[in-house]
Length: 379
Image (tube, rainbow, N blue to C red; front, side, top):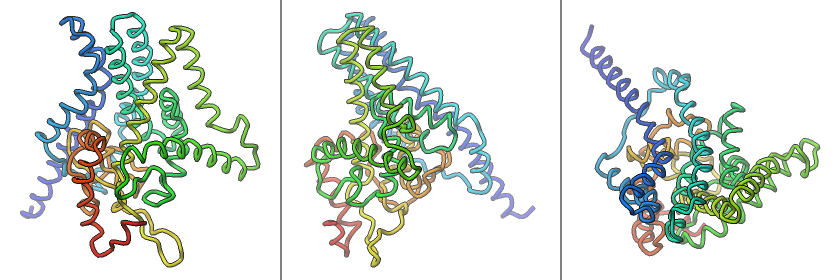
Protein backbone atom coordinates (compact mmCIF):
# COMPACT_ATOMS: atom_id res chain seq x y z
CA UNK A 1 0.00 0.00 0.00
CA UNK A 2 1.41 3.37 -0.99
CA UNK A 3 2.01 6.16 1.50
CA UNK A 4 -0.74 8.19 -0.24
CA UNK A 5 -3.28 5.36 0.34
CA UNK A 6 -2.29 5.10 4.01
CA UNK A 7 -2.63 8.86 4.43
CA UNK A 8 -6.04 8.84 2.74
CA UNK A 9 -7.23 5.91 4.86
CA UNK A 10 -6.04 7.60 8.05
CA UNK A 11 -7.71 10.87 7.11
CA UNK A 12 -11.00 9.14 6.23
CA UNK A 13 -10.94 7.22 9.52
CA UNK A 14 -10.22 10.40 11.48
CA UNK A 15 -13.07 12.24 9.77
CA UNK A 16 -15.45 9.35 10.44
CA UNK A 17 -14.48 9.34 14.12
CA UNK A 18 -15.03 13.08 14.37
CA UNK A 19 -18.41 12.79 12.62
CA UNK A 20 -19.42 10.09 15.12
CA UNK A 21 -18.44 12.33 18.04
CA UNK A 22 -20.33 15.19 16.44
CA UNK A 23 -23.37 12.96 15.97
CA UNK A 24 -23.84 12.61 19.71
CA UNK A 25 -22.91 16.22 20.36
CA UNK A 26 -26.27 17.17 18.86
CA UNK A 27 -27.76 16.04 22.15
CA UNK A 28 -26.50 19.42 23.38
CA UNK A 29 -29.46 20.84 21.46
CA UNK A 30 -31.74 19.10 23.97
CA UNK A 31 -30.27 21.08 26.89
CA UNK A 32 -32.73 24.02 26.57
CA UNK A 33 -35.60 21.61 27.25
CA UNK A 34 -34.18 20.57 30.63
CA UNK A 35 -32.85 23.99 31.66
CA UNK A 36 -36.16 25.34 33.10
CA UNK A 37 -36.80 22.36 35.42
CA UNK A 38 -33.14 22.27 36.50
CA UNK A 39 -33.05 26.00 37.20
CA UNK A 40 -36.36 25.82 39.05
CA UNK A 41 -35.02 23.03 41.26
CA UNK A 42 -31.89 25.06 42.05
CA UNK A 43 -33.97 28.16 42.72
CA UNK A 44 -36.28 26.34 45.12
CA UNK A 45 -33.38 24.69 46.95
CA UNK A 46 -31.55 27.99 47.41
CA UNK A 47 -34.59 30.18 48.08
CA UNK A 48 -33.76 32.21 44.95
CA UNK A 49 -36.54 30.93 42.73
CA UNK A 50 -37.34 34.37 41.28
CA UNK A 51 -33.71 34.96 40.31
CA UNK A 52 -33.30 31.52 38.75
CA UNK A 53 -36.50 31.98 36.72
CA UNK A 54 -34.32 34.24 34.55
CA UNK A 55 -31.72 31.51 34.17
CA UNK A 56 -32.39 30.52 30.56
CA UNK A 57 -31.45 33.92 29.04
CA UNK A 58 -28.40 34.03 31.32
CA UNK A 59 -27.26 30.62 30.08
CA UNK A 60 -28.12 31.13 26.40
CA UNK A 61 -26.86 34.71 26.01
CA UNK A 62 -24.26 34.82 28.77
CA UNK A 63 -22.61 31.47 29.42
CA UNK A 64 -22.88 29.95 25.93
CA UNK A 65 -21.08 32.85 24.17
CA UNK A 66 -18.15 32.38 26.56
CA UNK A 67 -18.05 28.63 26.00
CA UNK A 68 -18.38 29.24 22.27
CA UNK A 69 -15.17 31.26 22.25
CA UNK A 70 -13.38 28.70 24.42
CA UNK A 71 -14.34 25.70 22.25
CA UNK A 72 -13.61 27.47 18.97
CA UNK A 73 -14.70 26.69 15.43
CA UNK A 74 -15.76 23.55 13.62
CA UNK A 75 -13.99 23.00 10.31
CA UNK A 76 -15.38 19.50 9.76
CA UNK A 77 -17.29 18.98 6.52
CA UNK A 78 -18.68 15.55 5.57
CA UNK A 79 -17.35 13.97 2.40
CA UNK A 80 -20.00 14.07 -0.33
CA UNK A 81 -19.32 10.52 -1.56
CA UNK A 82 -18.45 8.55 1.54
CA UNK A 83 -20.22 10.40 4.38
CA UNK A 84 -23.31 12.21 3.13
CA UNK A 85 -25.29 9.18 1.86
CA UNK A 86 -24.62 7.31 5.12
CA UNK A 87 -25.49 10.28 7.34
CA UNK A 88 -28.71 10.93 5.42
CA UNK A 89 -29.85 7.35 6.07
CA UNK A 90 -29.28 7.38 9.84
CA UNK A 91 -32.62 7.67 11.64
CA UNK A 92 -30.97 9.05 14.78
CA UNK A 93 -30.73 12.58 13.37
CA UNK A 94 -34.40 12.66 12.41
CA UNK A 95 -35.44 11.18 15.76
CA UNK A 96 -33.67 13.89 17.75
CA UNK A 97 -35.67 16.67 16.07
CA UNK A 98 -39.00 14.83 16.39
CA UNK A 99 -38.38 14.11 20.08
CA UNK A 100 -37.66 17.83 20.53
CA UNK A 101 -41.21 18.66 19.40
CA UNK A 102 -42.83 16.26 21.86
CA UNK A 103 -40.58 17.43 24.68
CA UNK A 104 -41.41 21.09 24.05
CA UNK A 105 -45.14 20.35 24.16
CA UNK A 106 -44.60 18.73 27.56
CA UNK A 107 -42.45 21.66 28.73
CA UNK A 108 -45.13 24.14 27.68
CA UNK A 109 -47.81 22.35 29.68
CA UNK A 110 -45.56 21.94 32.70
CA UNK A 111 -44.38 25.54 32.44
CA UNK A 112 -47.85 27.05 32.76
CA UNK A 113 -48.66 24.68 35.65
CA UNK A 114 -45.56 25.92 37.52
CA UNK A 115 -46.49 29.54 36.83
CA UNK A 116 -50.04 29.01 38.07
CA UNK A 117 -48.78 27.37 41.27
CA UNK A 118 -47.84 30.82 42.57
CA UNK A 119 -44.18 30.05 43.20
CA UNK A 120 -43.00 33.29 41.53
CA UNK A 121 -43.27 36.99 42.27
CA UNK A 122 -44.28 39.29 39.40
CA UNK A 123 -40.63 39.69 38.37
CA UNK A 124 -40.04 35.97 38.67
CA UNK A 125 -43.14 35.21 36.60
CA UNK A 126 -41.91 37.53 33.86
CA UNK A 127 -38.54 35.77 33.87
CA UNK A 128 -40.27 32.41 33.64
CA UNK A 129 -42.28 33.46 30.58
CA UNK A 130 -39.14 34.87 28.94
CA UNK A 131 -37.21 31.68 29.71
CA UNK A 132 -39.87 29.37 28.27
CA UNK A 133 -40.21 31.72 25.28
CA UNK A 134 -36.49 31.52 24.52
CA UNK A 135 -36.75 27.73 24.52
CA UNK A 136 -39.67 28.16 22.12
CA UNK A 137 -37.52 30.38 19.91
CA UNK A 138 -34.92 27.63 19.78
CA UNK A 139 -37.81 25.32 18.96
CA UNK A 140 -38.65 27.39 15.89
CA UNK A 141 -35.18 26.46 14.67
CA UNK A 142 -36.15 22.78 15.06
CA UNK A 143 -39.39 23.48 13.19
CA UNK A 144 -37.32 25.19 10.49
CA UNK A 145 -35.37 21.98 9.98
CA UNK A 146 -38.55 19.89 9.83
CA UNK A 147 -40.67 22.02 7.47
CA UNK A 148 -38.01 21.86 4.77
CA UNK A 149 -38.35 18.08 4.48
CA UNK A 150 -40.63 16.04 2.20
CA UNK A 151 -41.66 13.53 4.87
CA UNK A 152 -45.19 14.31 6.08
CA UNK A 153 -44.51 13.42 9.71
CA UNK A 154 -41.64 15.90 9.79
CA UNK A 155 -43.53 18.72 8.09
CA UNK A 156 -46.57 18.18 10.33
CA UNK A 157 -44.38 18.09 13.43
CA UNK A 158 -42.76 21.35 12.31
CA UNK A 159 -46.16 22.93 11.74
CA UNK A 160 -47.38 21.81 15.15
CA UNK A 161 -44.31 23.25 16.86
CA UNK A 162 -44.89 26.56 15.09
CA UNK A 163 -48.52 26.46 16.23
CA UNK A 164 -47.31 26.20 19.83
CA UNK A 165 -45.65 29.60 19.43
CA UNK A 166 -48.40 31.20 17.28
CA UNK A 167 -46.11 31.58 14.25
CA UNK A 168 -47.53 29.08 11.77
CA UNK A 169 -47.20 31.57 8.92
CA UNK A 170 -43.46 30.88 9.00
CA UNK A 171 -44.13 27.43 7.54
CA UNK A 172 -45.47 29.01 4.36
CA UNK A 173 -43.68 32.35 4.13
CA UNK A 174 -40.22 31.03 4.91
CA UNK A 175 -40.22 28.41 2.15
CA UNK A 176 -42.25 30.16 -0.54
CA UNK A 177 -41.29 33.74 0.32
CA UNK A 178 -37.97 34.05 2.13
CA UNK A 179 -36.15 31.34 0.16
CA UNK A 180 -37.34 32.83 -3.12
CA UNK A 181 -36.57 36.49 -2.34
CA UNK A 182 -33.72 36.16 0.17
CA UNK A 183 -31.22 39.04 0.15
CA UNK A 184 -33.44 41.23 -2.04
CA UNK A 185 -35.61 44.25 -1.13
CA UNK A 186 -38.68 42.03 -1.59
CA UNK A 187 -37.79 39.95 1.47
CA UNK A 188 -38.83 41.28 4.89
CA UNK A 189 -36.58 38.70 6.58
CA UNK A 190 -33.41 40.10 4.96
CA UNK A 191 -32.16 43.17 6.80
CA UNK A 192 -30.74 46.10 4.87
CA UNK A 193 -27.38 47.78 5.39
CA UNK A 194 -27.63 50.34 8.23
CA UNK A 195 -31.13 49.12 9.20
CA UNK A 196 -31.49 48.79 12.96
CA UNK A 197 -33.06 45.75 14.59
CA UNK A 198 -35.89 47.93 15.92
CA UNK A 199 -36.72 49.14 12.43
CA UNK A 200 -36.52 45.61 11.06
CA UNK A 201 -38.76 43.81 13.59
CA UNK A 202 -42.14 45.57 13.10
CA UNK A 203 -41.93 45.21 9.33
CA UNK A 204 -40.93 41.54 9.64
CA UNK A 205 -43.81 40.74 12.00
CA UNK A 206 -46.48 42.30 9.78
CA UNK A 207 -45.15 41.49 6.31
CA UNK A 208 -44.33 37.87 7.04
CA UNK A 209 -47.76 37.23 8.56
CA UNK A 210 -49.66 38.85 5.70
CA UNK A 211 -47.42 37.40 3.00
CA UNK A 212 -47.98 33.88 4.32
CA UNK A 213 -51.73 34.26 3.79
CA UNK A 214 -51.16 35.81 0.36
CA UNK A 215 -48.87 32.97 -0.75
CA UNK A 216 -51.26 30.30 0.51
CA UNK A 217 -54.19 31.99 -1.25
CA UNK A 218 -52.20 32.07 -4.50
CA UNK A 219 -51.35 28.37 -4.15
CA UNK A 220 -54.99 27.45 -3.66
CA UNK A 221 -56.18 29.63 -6.56
CA UNK A 222 -53.69 27.92 -8.90
CA UNK A 223 -55.26 24.62 -7.91
CA UNK A 224 -58.78 25.98 -8.44
CA UNK A 225 -59.68 26.14 -4.75
CA UNK A 226 -61.08 28.97 -2.65
CA UNK A 227 -58.54 30.62 -0.30
CA UNK A 228 -60.95 30.30 2.63
CA UNK A 229 -61.47 26.57 2.79
CA UNK A 230 -60.39 23.48 4.69
CA UNK A 231 -57.53 23.13 2.21
CA UNK A 232 -55.85 26.27 3.54
CA UNK A 233 -53.15 24.89 5.83
CA UNK A 234 -52.78 28.18 7.70
CA UNK A 235 -56.35 27.93 8.94
CA UNK A 236 -55.49 24.55 10.46
CA UNK A 237 -52.22 25.64 12.02
CA UNK A 238 -53.56 28.89 13.43
CA UNK A 239 -56.64 26.95 14.49
CA UNK A 240 -54.37 24.77 16.63
CA UNK A 241 -52.84 27.93 18.15
CA UNK A 242 -56.33 29.24 18.94
CA UNK A 243 -57.32 25.89 20.46
CA UNK A 244 -54.22 25.88 22.66
CA UNK A 245 -55.00 29.42 23.79
CA UNK A 246 -58.51 28.31 24.77
CA UNK A 247 -57.17 25.26 26.62
CA UNK A 248 -54.61 27.32 28.53
CA UNK A 249 -57.25 29.95 29.33
CA UNK A 250 -59.85 27.45 30.54
CA UNK A 251 -57.34 25.52 32.60
CA UNK A 252 -55.44 28.45 34.12
CA UNK A 253 -57.53 31.55 33.49
CA UNK A 254 -56.04 34.84 32.36
CA UNK A 255 -52.63 33.72 33.62
CA UNK A 256 -52.68 30.78 31.22
CA UNK A 257 -53.58 33.06 28.31
CA UNK A 258 -50.83 35.54 29.15
CA UNK A 259 -48.30 32.73 29.51
CA UNK A 260 -49.17 31.20 26.13
CA UNK A 261 -49.19 34.50 24.26
CA UNK A 262 -46.15 35.85 26.10
CA UNK A 263 -43.90 32.88 25.43
CA UNK A 264 -45.07 32.93 21.80
CA UNK A 265 -44.08 36.59 21.41
CA UNK A 266 -40.63 35.97 22.88
CA UNK A 267 -40.17 32.89 20.66
CA UNK A 268 -41.02 34.48 17.32
CA UNK A 269 -39.16 37.67 18.21
CA UNK A 270 -36.01 35.60 18.78
CA UNK A 271 -36.58 34.02 15.37
CA UNK A 272 -36.79 37.39 13.67
CA UNK A 273 -33.67 38.65 15.45
CA UNK A 274 -31.84 35.64 14.04
CA UNK A 275 -33.24 36.45 10.59
CA UNK A 276 -31.89 39.98 11.03
CA UNK A 277 -28.33 38.86 11.59
CA UNK A 278 -28.29 36.05 9.01
CA UNK A 279 -28.48 38.31 5.94
CA UNK A 280 -27.58 41.77 7.21
CA UNK A 281 -26.44 44.05 4.40
CA UNK A 282 -26.19 41.28 1.78
CA UNK A 283 -27.78 41.71 -1.65
CA UNK A 284 -28.24 39.48 -4.66
CA UNK A 285 -27.16 41.47 -7.68
CA UNK A 286 -29.77 42.47 -10.24
CA UNK A 287 -29.05 41.10 -13.73
CA UNK A 288 -29.59 42.86 -17.04
CA UNK A 289 -32.86 40.98 -17.55
CA UNK A 290 -34.24 42.49 -14.36
CA UNK A 291 -34.00 39.29 -12.34
CA UNK A 292 -31.80 38.68 -9.36
CA UNK A 293 -28.80 36.41 -9.53
CA UNK A 294 -29.17 32.84 -8.26
CA UNK A 295 -28.89 32.35 -4.50
CA UNK A 296 -25.41 31.20 -3.55
CA UNK A 297 -23.54 30.67 -0.26
CA UNK A 298 -22.38 34.29 -0.52
CA UNK A 299 -25.88 35.62 0.22
CA UNK A 300 -26.09 34.38 3.82
CA UNK A 301 -23.84 34.86 6.81
CA UNK A 302 -22.10 31.87 8.34
CA UNK A 303 -20.86 31.39 11.87
CA UNK A 304 -18.86 28.24 12.32
CA UNK A 305 -18.43 28.11 16.09
CA UNK A 306 -18.78 24.53 17.28
CA UNK A 307 -20.97 24.89 20.37
CA UNK A 308 -23.66 27.12 18.92
CA UNK A 309 -23.55 25.07 15.73
CA UNK A 310 -24.59 21.84 17.43
CA UNK A 311 -26.82 23.77 19.85
CA UNK A 312 -28.80 25.02 16.82
CA UNK A 313 -28.66 21.91 14.61
CA UNK A 314 -26.11 23.65 12.37
CA UNK A 315 -28.39 26.57 11.54
CA UNK A 316 -25.24 28.69 11.54
CA UNK A 317 -24.13 26.94 8.35
CA UNK A 318 -26.84 29.06 6.82
CA UNK A 319 -25.15 29.64 3.49
CA UNK A 320 -25.26 25.96 2.59
CA UNK A 321 -28.87 25.77 3.72
CA UNK A 322 -29.93 28.58 1.39
CA UNK A 323 -27.96 27.21 -1.53
CA UNK A 324 -29.33 23.66 -0.95
CA UNK A 325 -32.49 24.07 1.12
CA UNK A 326 -33.36 20.38 1.52
CA UNK A 327 -29.98 19.29 2.89
CA UNK A 328 -30.41 17.81 6.35
CA UNK A 329 -28.70 19.53 9.23
CA UNK A 330 -26.14 16.77 9.78
CA UNK A 331 -24.67 17.18 6.27
CA UNK A 332 -24.63 20.97 6.00
CA UNK A 333 -21.21 22.30 5.03
CA UNK A 334 -19.19 25.32 6.03
CA UNK A 335 -18.24 27.63 3.14
CA UNK A 336 -15.28 29.93 3.64
CA UNK A 337 -16.46 31.96 0.65
CA UNK A 338 -19.56 32.99 2.60
CA UNK A 339 -19.51 36.19 4.65
CA UNK A 340 -18.56 35.23 8.21
CA UNK A 341 -20.06 36.53 11.44
CA UNK A 342 -17.45 37.41 14.06
CA UNK A 343 -19.10 35.22 16.72
CA UNK A 344 -21.82 32.62 17.26
CA UNK A 345 -25.51 33.44 17.04
CA UNK A 346 -25.91 33.74 20.83
CA UNK A 347 -23.37 36.56 20.90
CA UNK A 348 -24.68 38.21 17.74
CA UNK A 349 -28.28 38.28 19.04
CA UNK A 350 -27.11 40.30 22.03
CA UNK A 351 -25.04 42.57 19.79
CA UNK A 352 -28.01 43.21 17.48
CA UNK A 353 -29.99 44.60 20.43
CA UNK A 354 -27.55 47.54 20.60
CA UNK A 355 -27.68 49.20 17.14
CA UNK A 356 -24.67 51.53 17.54
CA UNK A 357 -22.48 48.63 18.63
CA UNK A 358 -23.93 46.40 15.90
CA UNK A 359 -23.12 48.96 13.21
CA UNK A 360 -19.61 49.46 14.58
CA UNK A 361 -18.91 45.74 14.29
CA UNK A 362 -20.90 44.79 11.18
CA UNK A 363 -20.91 47.81 8.85
CA UNK A 364 -17.15 47.65 8.13
CA UNK A 365 -17.61 43.98 7.21
CA UNK A 366 -20.43 44.81 4.80
CA UNK A 367 -18.46 47.69 3.29
CA UNK A 368 -15.39 45.50 2.86
CA UNK A 369 -17.49 42.81 1.22
CA UNK A 370 -18.88 45.26 -1.37
CA UNK A 371 -15.67 47.26 -1.90
CA UNK A 372 -15.74 48.43 -5.49
CA UNK A 373 -19.50 47.87 -5.67
CA UNK A 374 -20.62 50.48 -3.16
CA UNK A 375 -23.90 50.94 -5.05
CA UNK A 376 -24.92 47.57 -3.68
CA UNK A 377 -25.13 49.12 -0.22
CA UNK A 378 -28.02 51.30 -1.37
CA UNK A 379 -30.05 48.53 -3.03
